[in-house]
Image 1 (cartoon, rainbow, N blue to C red):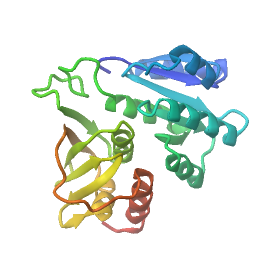
Image 2: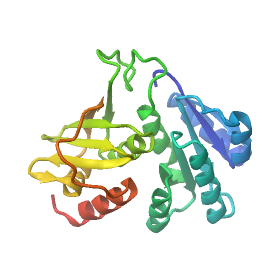
Image 3: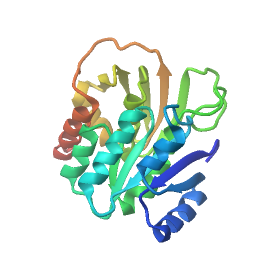
Length: 244
């Protein structure tokens, strides 16, 4: 992974951390451990963390306590991607996490693919590079490739990092769409004849894609004002129930 991203894992056992560090290191992530969320806060104090940084927090013996700690970290550093993971995660628990502002809540088996996908979405350290590490003609444009199941993460990340602009998508299966971000949520989306959340639902079912984000691009209209967590939940349900 170009322009190495840094991952801090908190609340993990030494044995599990060693295993994760080895796997994630091969994926291009610099990984370090902290005993708990308080140790992360103590390091950064009130200063914002480095731009290319993720924090993942293990469940431990209490999901409720782990969730509370992860939320407190997200509230302190809202632009910092925070992922909570556990041995098992019910969908209702995952949705609860998204509703409260976390970037993702996944099982341990899903953890590596999730954080590596989020790392690709982090803004580059150099303004001359796009998110893929390829030189960009414009500092206001980011380029990355996404698998179908990574679109939700990308939208969540763009909203949680207070981006405003247009995410233009070109799907390998054919077709293209646009999602407009503003005010911390998706304000409009277009895919074929669909607009708003139905358009997002179709995109979630359309497979791998190339994505370019254009900072500052204005939406032609507003078709949604609901929080991003609500958008993703409704679009996911709609996609699951659809035959598209």
